[in-house]
Amino acid sequence: MKFCPCNFEDELEATKGKLREREDLEVIEERCLLYCGQCLMEPFALVNGKNIVTGKPEELYEKINQYVIEMRQGVVVK
Image (cartoon, rainbow, N blue to C red; front, side, top):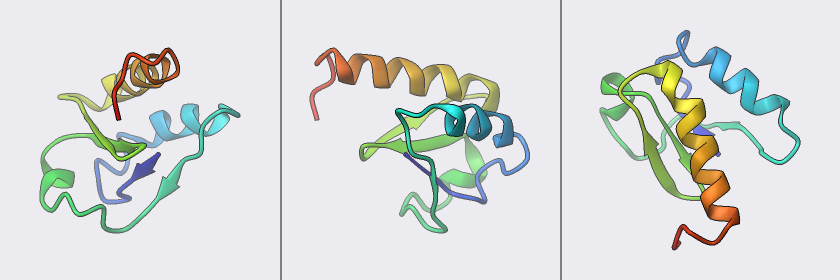
């Protein structure tokens, strides 16, 4: 999964830390994810190319986790 390092930088550190602890996921910080302006408006991450967005930084881990579970169960269509 990819994060823009400018996206809610301090607020998302805990989320990125929890994700880095997981052996089944890879966290990459990439300067431009081509979602111009979004990094200033709302917390998000790209997971397998899917833009996962939340209203609050503390909700992003759970939304990413749910997406990964659904992806592994074949519920998510790429």
